Image (cartoon, rainbow, N blue to C red; front, side):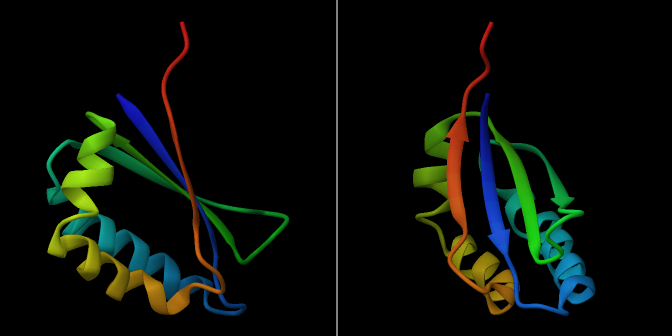
Length: 97
């Protein structure tokens, strides 16, 4: 399993609308992608405009090739992109041990 971690900074004062949008985007778009296994969204206490989206994928390619290369990626960005204050930072992780 691969863990995608997305560090998202949104525009100030848009937390409530963004939270609705990100959950809707994951449950209606990303969750249907090949290799999707689950997700969580975390909101920073210290930095109100910061969120961490964590998505579990079967393989790295399920995210980087299958999802990102599909029309669903454009659909996902249309849902959450208008809230971004800057481009999200994305990293992928594997389990140790």
